[in-house]
Image (cartoon, rainbow, N blue to C red; front, side, top):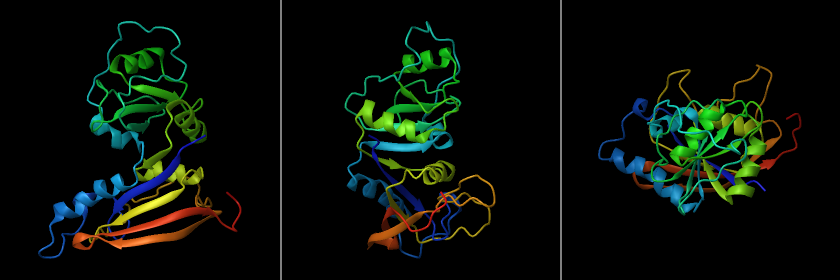
Length: 241
């Protein structure tokens, strides 16, 4: 059974994600306090970990390509390394491009979501690094399968989906988001084309949110003017997903 998935994000009031582009806070408002709200609110969910896309996880992937000492056997099975009781940091990396060099993403245990086409050497490298992994179908895009494995094999019950926009868009299209937790920063980006909360790549006639409705469950104004909005995602009357 897949975990409950909460999309937890912070954006400018126009939904943009690049923090260094946002307008400055009003006079007397401490920008550092505003940005600290993200982790503080995340902790309220008491989740078992978090999910991000490859580009977001790059900050924690500090290793280099290498030839592992030995490939070993059973490489094509879900691999559960020693989590040491930590939360999980799940990276959606279909092509296995990230080289970790360690098992540490902000203190959390790394779990790579891969396509079945990755090489045995890459899988052996992950094992040497202490990184767990699971497969999301031949091309690494079967998110339903990946989330089922995350729940069944790793015992994850609640997890935060934390972007970027392309990863959020893929989960939205797959109907895998149960709740949305959005922190709205009191600032503006304003430029067209800047990454936003949901960015599903598809044809012009596709509607990745078709068939879904949002039910507002809460709003809270935090110190400095940050607003925390919460919604549950429900199946709506609309069809055509």
